[in-house]
Structure formats: structure tokens, C-alpha cells
Length: 186
Image (tube, rainbow, N blue to C red; front, side):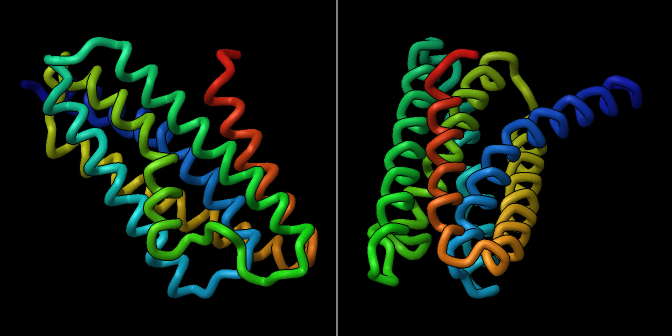
């Protein structure tokens, strides 16, 4: 393989990773609008990065065995999870309780990470069929999504201070809108 084709493949993977990581950025932006400590932000980014490694890896490994239908199901499931989380955040913002029903800690963090990484599973299916370099692909996907998650969380945290009580409703609206975008083909 020559230098030009290696650079072209690396650039293609980086562009795909940025596209897949934008949902992590968007969700990070919405999650950053709830009160999070920097330690939580660090762990959220790491967890979402790990899911963006694991999900395409599993997709690549079984990509030769499954059809495009499974990728569609993964996208529908991810969109539905984001809608449910967004609705929950909007409703929680109107309650006087400080603790949301699902927070980005423990099981709630797994749900968040899974919802934003399901699309990378379906991309992994396609890449597995085309024989992409597994280690390079999943490393780029994981690193880019982790960094974009951190950027989204930090930007959201900054806006949370300005928006005050409305920040959780806005964050839920962002998750809700992104979930609807995943479900509607436009």
C-alpha cells in the first residue's frame, strides 16, 4: 500500500469519525446543561469513547454475517433512546426535585453511551464488509468521539451557568431533537 492510499484511508476514517462523533458532541452539549463536576465529565467522555470503540468493533466482526436491516434497527433504537432521555430531562426540569430520573452516572451513563454509539455499530457492519483496518478504525472512532464528548460537555457546562433553571429543559430538547433526527430520514 502506498503513502497516498494510506493517507486517503486515514482521512476517510477521520471524516467518518467526526461525523459519528458529532452525535456524541450534541448529546454532550445537552448533558453538559445539567450540573456535572469535571470528574463526571472526564468519565462520561471516556465511557462514550469506549462505546465508540466497542460498538464498531462488534459491527466489523459480524459485518459479513448480517444485512443492512440490523443497522437500521440500531439507528431506530438509538433514536428512541435519545427521545426518551430528552423527554425525561424536559419533564425533570419542571419538577422541584434536584435529581433527574436518569443521570449520566452508573446505568444512566451506559444508556447515554449506548444511545450515541449505536450508529457506529451500523457503520462497523459496513466497514466489516469492506475489510477496513480494524484497529485503526476503532482507535480513531473512540478518540474522536471522546474528545467531541468532552468539548460538548464543557460547552454545555458553560452555558448551564448562563441559562440557570432552563438549562435542563434545553438539554432535554437537544436530546429529543437529535433522537427525532435519527428516526426521520431528512
